Figure: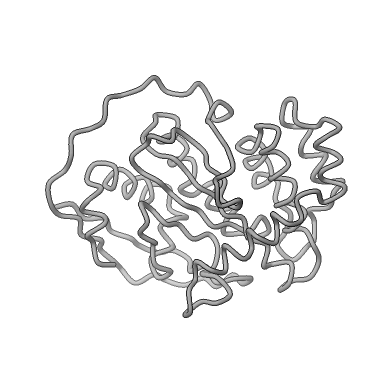
Length: 254
């Protein structure tokens, strides 16, 4: 039996920062594990990770498609909690597992904060990320955007700023990418991605579940436990437990 203890954290609520003390929670994972898959040579860097658009037209797939663990992330580029997850929270640990072929990631990009806070920064950023995917640079540009995220209340993802950040990614800032950013080439993708985000919340959360939300091997981490996404060690422990005993995770009642 393996236990993961979750301590103090923050609850993520769409469009607002609300600091709370997460009630002490224990996720009990019990049962028999499985033999580890045969190791593959690690990818040299995050920029070498395979990336493509899924057949549904909204999900961006990153990593070894044969990896046993799938982490589906729902993010809004303006969300400060997404920035925290991506920079100092659990994302770096996920990235290491992706580089070792132990996990793959799926991204659904939301843009609801534009409607709640005003402006169009999220939509412009999602469009730019889709344009980066077209150039095979989604992973690197995604990392750069969150590392340089403007304040949530500031509509800071202007086209000028997005192109400025693109210059930090080798071979991205070309004429096709610049035109796609300036002309909102992937406007339909932005709209469809927001709808996909809203759908995952179901009838109880018609406006979406909040960001970041993580669904691991088709099992969503409930909002009340979302604080672990911001705790690098706790998230790493959870990923390792799921990697070791994936069927126990599926059977766990949260």
